[in-house]
Image (cartoon, rainbow, N blue to C red; front, side):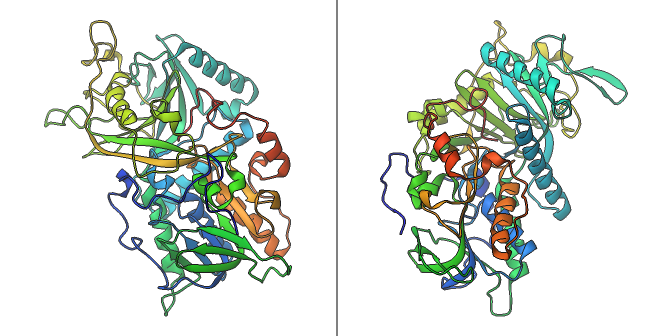
Length: 522
């Protein structure tokens, strides 16, 4: 049986029983709250999925599409989608210029996969296609970003077409033909007039991530239900996996060599898929230094100005990544009428930047103060006469923004605290080599035939998890039927002993920055 006591300083605990209240959980699914498809935990299944976030849910969806006859049991320690997917910043954005080109292309495919699914099924998750603005407030990091984009344009122009640079002044800023009028894009137009520059990614989105997952889970339950209330898909909430064990001997895939232990009893299966992300090392302590829990924090903030009959609600019109020195923060806005600003980040203000923390029951007060006090000094939050509300198009200029009402005499944005409606934390799974871990788990890492993993997204799961989950299921099914077909997954994501050895030659998580200023959490 796997280790269930903490033996490594960064090994994860079980998910907290009383997590902080996420904004995304203010409208929970009545069908999913406390849901147990069967009152008793089944004794066996064909496949057990541990975790009900975006990875586990898209894996279950793929199993349903490809092998609907399989008995699939999903175990969730808390309520459905109560982990990282239900606690993130509400972004879905591929990082085109920060990844290797083939990885960036994979992330783009993830983005369009989710977008198409939302449109096809009319999923009510407030999906809003927009552009992503990465605002740089440090000269050295901005210079590095420009160099990265320039190299991408030289080597992969098709991919680089998804990215543009916006520099100070009008020289070099992109211009677009909108409504038969040539309009330039400026930092002021983007509400970041004090930034050194910005990278625009034309494919981004904001959404209500919990509602996306909840819709798919409800659909799976409805499709698989039968007369006695059971079905091919069985969701068991409030059933934490406390350990896994393997019976050695017998090679028939129809046997059930894997057992997952829970406080409600044990369940066995021929295949087990861990979609446990930051909590993976609680079940596989060998991953304690490979997928490290890191606590992030997000606030829902009221806009500084209330709308009035003469002024519409604030609409910032884009999603944002804000890179200022060691900090990398992220921002979206909810639709009217509430129009809350969902602002996350501030980890440098947390003890050890949250590294090794798997408790999401609390928030770090210094981070809370940072989030409510810093945003208004970075992004112009004044209500303008015309907002770039048509976020499906490339935004128009705001030439009169230079005298914005919240700029003081020195030209710096005057900061003031915003009022939070919610402060919450969530546990991310940071990968030691920056790539997710997808595929069969080798025996040296506590696995063996039939145990699979999909997680370790380093705060960047939304544009990675859907197709990663699809790929890992295809790998699982190929073993069942004896096929060896290729799957759509970057080779860097696959779990191999060679990769483990190479990853462990790198600095531990928390000692090495990731990407440009550690930009992640989208």
